[in-house]
Length: 396
Image 1: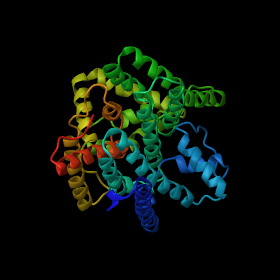
Image 2: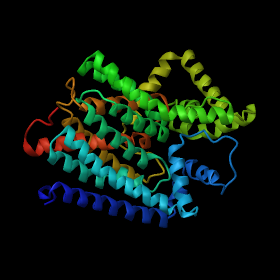
Image 3: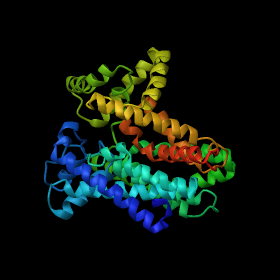
Image 4: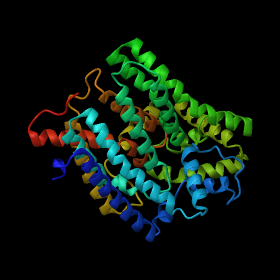
């Protein structure tokens, strides 16, 4: 029935379904106090300190600032530390992502596949689960999808200053999650393979002009405030060492042990802390290059494992393991025909390869795979459509 709706009515139905599910789960999440059980990052408390409601930390550039800014603006608008308006905003962002997936799917496949992917995203348990978390995932996914909608619009067009504006948006995505910072370098390789060196260079030069601007502004702010260069955040060294192991028990112990080590050494400067653990990781690599390589390869597999770890119950882990196994299998089937040189799918594959490589070195978590979920769903929807039609999917 939904397939027969015109585009506007379908979008309204998909958005309404996604919003209702996210609002319902958020109500359940808050009523059960699950926010305290799962914990949250620094963003919410830092936003309150920027508003003068909590003491200002000695250093506030440990995390990328955009999500904190949005929380601060939302709380300031309502003049209350109640997180409910922020959670409602995240429900809206999550529902909007469904519409962006349909737009993205229309550029990468046919309309029926795009609609199936949109409905799938509306129902996806991982996307729903992270909506009420006071973390960057929901906002970052919506922003990244909007960036890719714009990127595919410019894929085959004549080069123009629109790429600078698109790069500016990408740079804001970096200030939401700094992990995206190096993506243009991988995109350049994809463009070079499919469209030639000259166009790839000019495309990424225009994109990069906008891409660097937000980080440059944040870096300048940090330099004038602290006299130190902090492009996005200071956590890279910490995240590098914390997750540079395949032993789950070591991962559990590392934060406490690292905190004790920092206190023992008297390190108070967050930049010095990051540098310390970056040097420790480099020393481990130099001492055992083969062992380090095994860790990196093993972390790549862990990044793509189909089941989460605790604190989820065994039945939750099992159910999600089945779900992700099906998702991956359909995505592999749908991936046929998407790797041709020059295909706009190259931009999505570049993101997939880039985030896999980054999290094979830095801290690995299924939470950090979440930005790839809409792209996996698009591939899986292509695979499911192909199986239902009995044809080879999808068009490149």
